[in-house]
Picture 1 (cartoon, rainbow, N blue to C red):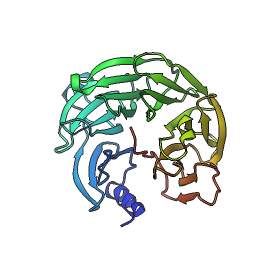
Picture 2: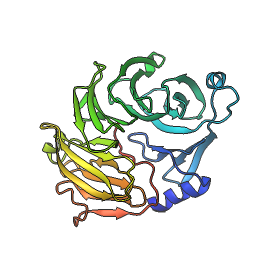
Picture 3: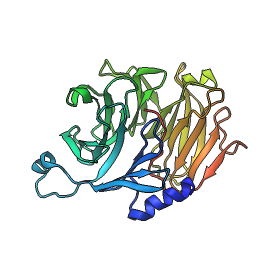
Picture 4: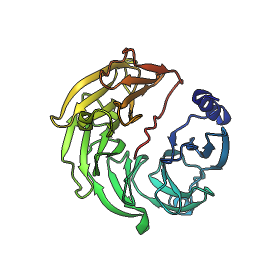
Length: 311
């Protein structure tokens, strides 16, 4: 069975849009998919469901929202570095739910944000998790200390759509926001130290990884959020040394998700773009051309998320 047929099976089994996807780093046989109100862990090797459960608000959540028996998932993330093998779920009400991977049992829930949790990022070496939200805030949590909030990062004026740790400096990260900026932060300070001003709201961000062209470690790629014109979404490549945009990939439909995959230590990384109705495109990262001979497009229907196998 191909990846495309597997994804079709994932969609057909529940007849609901997949809201979020995550794979534990180093264990690509396991895939966590989140639908609006259901969580499923798949075994990609055998193409079967390992476990699934309906997602409902826990006791604390129910007390704060009486009369509500249903809440929707907005983001998920495996925490493979934890000895307990956990995964976290963010919901539309701003709660973070912590689950055990082996049983899917919820072991903790807490109010993290004033609105939906939109994104998680896992620190490569420390027991830290970043959460981003529609409440315009980013928060840093320590799961080894009872999920205490270490720091709150302020500076965005609209939804923070995605956060991503820098693979070249574990203590810095980037955030993409609907306010039209992509900001860079350090985990030891609540304020950003750089801000890239884009022409429209930003939906996604990623760093170029190590390996291949070492100059690429100074590059970042960003993707714009939903646009009124159907062919007006844009991916941009930025030189972080000069804080300037060096290339644009235009004509993407509706919105743009971006990711960078390090396929081989001696070859340039692969740039991935995805947009509504246009499928996933793989680009030669040395030319960035959408129609370059090395580019390929996989048509998967409407896309809500793209996974890049790094924190």
